[in-house]
Image (cartoon, rainbow, N blue to C red):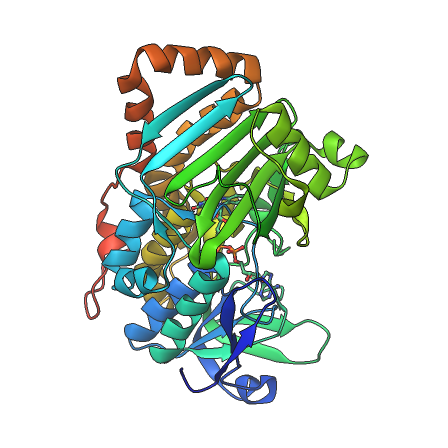
Length: 415
Ligand SMILES: Cc1cc2nc3c(=O)[nH]c(=O)nc-3n(C[C@H](O)[C@H](O)[C@H](O)COP(=O)(O)OP(=O)(O)OC[C@H]3O[C@@H](n4cnc5c(N)ncnc54)[C@H](O)[C@@H]3O)c2cc1C
């Protein structure tokens, strides 16, 4: 066990290590940081670690006590695994346990489609995110938690970006700030082009885990149940826990509790839903689909879900978070050396190239999943042409390369 952690049983069969801060708020205010990263999810921890490995003084701020649960399907796709391998962490991730994913099963009413998966791994976010924070700390990152951060207004001539700790008088200074605060932690900053806009019809995310569930749900498969009110994804993670995550219509949630909503969707898609599956707390998210016009501002970059998000399908969000975290490193290093006012535009365009192109396919699927009858027709078509379904899943898992993703310590690319 690492120094600064202690084992805790979380009452669900999962044993995790409680994460301790490595620095106090008072001590953090005494330094001028090269980089402050807000949010210790996948994107924040990987970016903070990458910057520390490049020799920078980095502070990672997280508002929640870790380990924490997070609404997520817990499925790392092929691209996410390739990203974790590229930053040298895939071996550690596999050691967490979890299950290799080899099958995707989509069910709508009486119809179901099974597609083999070439790559994928299911592991709880509690374990995964804890590992990534520990890896960041090992690389030299200072970790301040629990602490909620907000980016302060800025004078564009400033050589600093200031971060306030909410509920305190503390202000922290850094050459560059990376916002990786996820969906719920959308930062309001004084740059209108960076404000987020949520889609009017955006669904809400729901998540829970089950220690007891029907034998139907087997390790290695992603189960997806689709109904008119939303869709639910289920997969087995380490310790025999079933992870349940969903994107559901807001109207359905006005009439039913979260657990009832999950059960209704599973039942109407013809999938088993015992009452025993739903005796853990159900968590919700902010509206899922949202975008920012610009993904950076003066000495500040948005990455991961904080940069925008579309509804989940087979596990793309974590791949995009890893991509953003790797790609932001050369940008942040250049900004620490010397701020170039063109950087916000270049970063926004880079994100379009490395992530935006992947998101259009997910938007298409999110649209299809909102129309169960059309979905059912698509399943029938895919059953008669199995290559069709496989080609789509392969496309979603596709690993694409880009120079900005392969930053090496000591090598600065022009941005
Ligand atoms: C229902 C659902 C199912 C999904 N299924 C999958 C899946 O199977 N596979 C997949 O790849 N993706 C999936 N995703 C998407 C995936 O969960 C996200 O894309 C991914 O977690 C993004 O990582 P992140 O680091 O940007 O944000 P997060 O993981 O949300 O991390 C953000 C962190 O910032 C912290 N924070 C927020 N505000 C502040 C603040 N002000 N100060 C300090 N800290 C702050 C939060 O506490 C949190 O720890 C799913 C999402 C949903 C909603």
